[in-house]
Every structure is written in structure tokens, then in C-alpha cells.
Length: 301
Image (cartoon, rainbow, N blue to C red; front, side):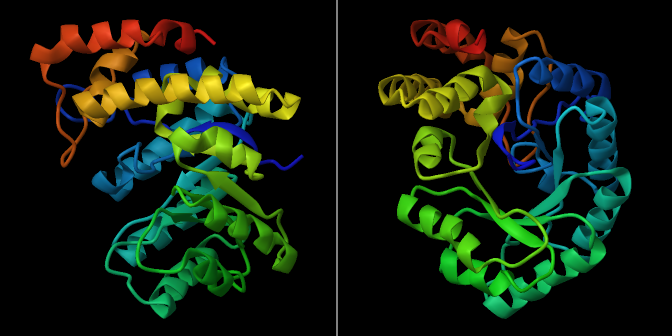
């Protein structure tokens, strides 16, 4: 079995009331998620607000998670940023401190395939001894053609694909037939609402925001798929999606960090801009909606 499989929280980053990284709470969240049978951690991605953090903060968070995990599961460090030299520095650091792989978004404004290839080539050179995954979530570029352009880069070994196009997703998976690199070709599904369907199409695992608070539900989804219990897998996916929809209605990041994680016993603070804080006037309505959707049962899995 590949090192990169199973259910992976796109780990959130807790902040204190004065907007500093809350490392004690981060350690507690990591330990809690490890009790839920997760496959690994994806650190400083979009949910982790890495692109809104300084390079030093991102390095310290990556170090802290790797130290807390202590080899129990693999850790992928997201290193993407608009500043290529910062992404290079983060890549080098991730390899030095023991990350199992690095990943990066396609930075905004990198509109041409040659510039994207140059960017990922620089990351690969900075961390030549660990796999590099692209992070694709839409855009004007043909995702399959782009991945073919990235495959000659020595450490590129797959992708986190966050999108609704299951045909395109499957085509990226099937690029394994053309892959001749040193690692196992790995494609994660990154759209939480389609985790079950991604697994049906062959995803090696799923990475997502909502796995911070109902990771056991997604583990059960994958177990249902492995057992051929399509009815249970579909039911669990729809129940998870109902929770996701509630968060979107109340402001996803603010609701997740301030209210949902507090419901689980963690004060993770508010999101950084451009994220918006949760509106306390809507707290009662929010928690009533979670109760009606069976949140506590899903979180207990």
C-alpha cells in the first residue's frame, strides 16, 4: 500500500486572540485527529491559511506538526506562495525537518504552462529527496495536459485534485501508466463533498477541510467503499455534505474554527483575512442546525 492513502485533514492552524499561532492548541488538535485513524496531515494549505502566514510562521508550524506526529503518520507540507523564492525556501525547509512530501498550489498569475513548469522545477530542486504533488483546483489550464508537462520534473509524483470533474480526475490517475519516476504515483481527491465518488474512481485518499472535525466519517466512507457497501458510503457522504452546507451558510472558515472546533473542545480562534470572523449573533441558529443534521454522531465516529 502507498505511504499516501486514507483520510487526511487539511490541518487548520489555530490562532490566539492576538493573532499568533497557538502551538499548544495545534498540538492538541493533532493528537485528537491521530485518535481518529487518519492517514496523514496536509499542513499549511488553504485550510491551514498558509498563504496568509509569514514564511517563518509556516516553517514553525510544519516543524511543530512533524515533531508532534513523531512518525506515526506521514506529513505533507504545502509550500505554495506567490513569491517563488519563498516557496523554494519552504520546500528546502520541509525536506530538512522531515516532511514526507511537499505540495503546492499553482500560484495565481502563473497563467502560462512554461511558467508553471519553471515554478515546480524550482521546488523540486529545493527538495530533491521527497515527492512533490501539484494542487489543482480549477483554472483555465487543462489539468491533464498540465500534469503531463510536470511529469518530467524528477520528483513530481501526482496531485491533489480539488474539482468536480470525475472524468478529468480519473485521467490524472491514469497518467500512472506514463509515469516513470522514483515514487508511487498518488492522486488525492480534494473536494470533500465528493470523497466517496473520488474513491470509486480510484483516489488513493482524500484531503479536506471538513476532516478536521468529522475525520471518522470519511474513514467510514472509505471503509464502505472497500467493502462494496455503496448504499452506506453514499449515505455517509450525503450526511457529511449536509454539515458542510450548514458551514457554508454561516461562513465556512469562521464557523469551523470558532464554533465547530470549540464544540469538540478546541479554541482555534478566528480566521485571518480575507477570512471573516464568525458572527456570534448567529451562534444559536448555527448549533441548532448542526444538532438537526446529526453532527455529534458523525463527529464521534
